Length: 161
Image 1: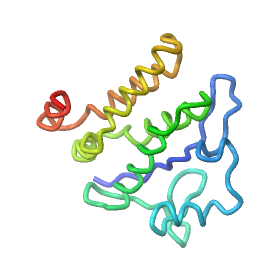
Image 2: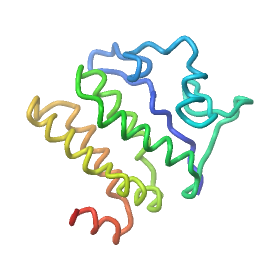
Image 3: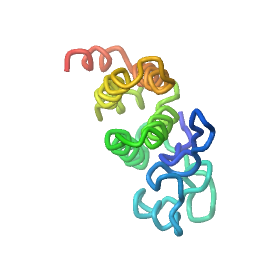
């Protein structure tokens, strides 16, 4: 099945309701976000709700689409790189959760191939050390649950890696 490409710069809302914009730019969109998105995603543009083509039409992908792999790699890179401040970490986690929240086993298999579970477990360990009762822990657990909707064979492999 096809699914709309989620944006890695999904606007989020912190516990205090102040976070907006892209976590890559600390809440401020760059002056020319379309040029940034074009360079980062191989010709795709970006708007407030996701990726769009040059004509402003929503971009969809399926399990064999290279653009989905590229977006996934960007989301995972940003998730892995987001350490401090907390707001940037939360935006990266929420963007990953949005990307992983679907029911396509093939896409979840790809997420595990790119080691999304390892990155999320690292983030969970860090969050548990800081504040085990935070909403951040809940978001990470939700993202892990989504990634683990993969096929049985790939899921079993991930537990032996």
